[in-house]
Image (spheres, one colour):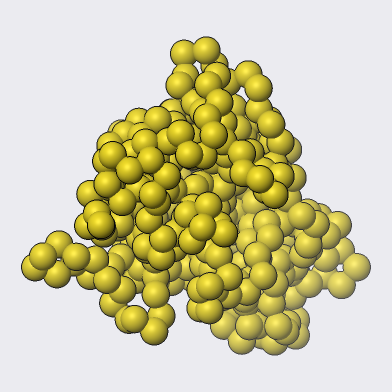
Length: 384
């Protein structure tokens, strides 16, 4: 592994396009509320590519000494900064081997993602991932383990021209301009719809950080509470001591619970709003006879995790191919390159996880593959 000082890096800038891609497969059982220790989604092929004008890297709190020998990666340190920065050469991407080595050394998921939940969330709220609820803890606020998700602190930098060593660009915005989440083939279901990315921007963004749903066509929200068929017996779970159906997750009130036990037909009832009654799942079951029940949860104040879609954050491109925020007062760029005191680095930390409350996470999705791709862009900068 080569080690360079910060002034030894040469690269140019003429506008950049950076792509990140994840490839994945579902394995095991996806009814994570019932089988939390077995529910996994595997992925591989993680990579970040860039153009010749850009150098991209990862920030690590620990030193990583044994990247694969076939990878060209440079360690950079800065005086007064106790972090380690690992950059690919200018114009070369961060490969899956590099990213997975970082994740492994720092204790995050490498080839498996476990369904977790953000819980209720609105842009700017504090964010941390939580474990699945269970039959003794209907709302589990315990923090998810690092090995259940991936968290990647990307750094970007570019110089003012192709020959100026160390003359880096400050105060330039970087946007997420394209994103695709999809099944790897026509037979691979819809588990990709449960993928979420938490975009952690620096403190200069007063609107705060946000959850991004790469498969959504418009902003929306995921309900993070509801009835569940926890043991998969095709009936909604109930509390034995009260004979009342259980609302898992986050909600305001139990308004709407029936006064008497259920005496209707033995058929699937869509209480959670899945949009179907064709096949039972963790989220779709029957009322059990004699148990106090909910016809719907409309009055219960089920809480939600809000997310943004690509159209909410993508910049406007004018006739001269110059990018700008749709609303200058509420920028949607993901990072801003710092000045000299910040080593001219643009920083954005992206947490990749599976939202366990997404209706796509059901048993029928096991052994399905998914892909996700991201594109980042920055305006070109004229050299002095």
